[in-house]
Length: 277
Image (cartoon, rainbow, N blue to C red; front, side, top):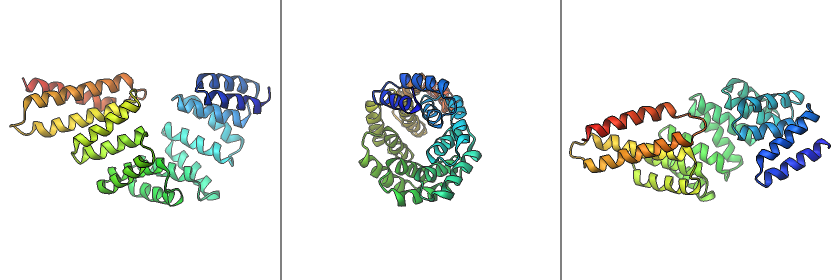
């Protein structure tokens, strides 16, 4: 079977929702054509989606070495590098793309992510603004831009941007989560809760939504606990909901990014519950 047919069959399996079989088909294709850039690239992307970052990076690195001027391959390779924490190398990859294609939105978006990851929020915002000047309706960029505005404390602007993203993609769970996070920071807990309930209804197994819901209840508990006249029954309710959501996050999560925070907060909530007795 020729590489083109292998790729075509794998793409059809992905369209049918059978990603495992697509990976198997591409693995067999790679055994037959170990230096085919397109097979390396497509298999690497599927493994990225399955959180197999080490193998994905190896395959995409090999694809990149074959032809560094292939923009799709370079962009995917850079994305794998970001996942593995190799942000300096990733930045170089995306800057090289932009040197030849200054309007390449994927590269602009990823450079913004790298800047935000490094704490350079102003640089990140400038990249997002450039990307939005090229694609003002791009939900992913609007979402990332709004999230970064929130992290810099520009809540009104963040909400305006995130609401635009939500209007364009009302079923986008990540947008719903970022909207909720902004409202949590503004202490508008009920609005935040409504957005997160919608997100969980859409995607019940989304670990991050459960984490954010736990944060919503914990934040209100911490705030109200400082008031000696607070209703203890309501405080117990907040502790119960926070613990339930955080435990659901631990049950569902695959990357454990927030595990240390959650375990610390669970201990804090246990102590808070004892103090309420």
